[in-house]
Length: 88
Image 1 (cartoon, rainbow, N blue to C red):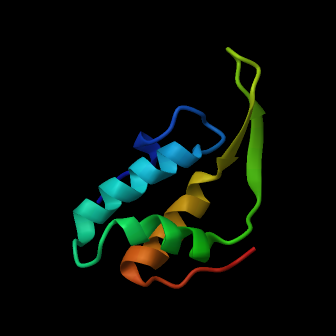
Image 2 (cartoon, rainbow, N blue to C red):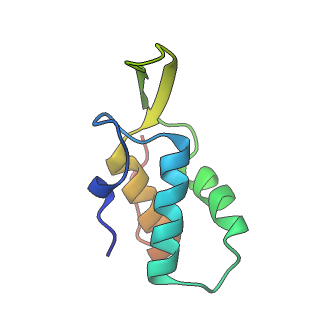
């Protein structure tokens, strides 16, 4: 199984690109039954509107929105394993 703690630069959570990379790794570890093109859309539908972290990049001072790792994990588990989750 993929360890979500191995993904992402920021301790507060994961960027959109990091989430996509995590989903690709997860996808390849559990299934290849459906097109990966649908995965991102299905993940977004499951995740819906959620609480996220907002940080300022220490280098460029740009505001970055991060999704908490535990949220990414539970939504990915719902997507790939059908595991029920709670919703905020």
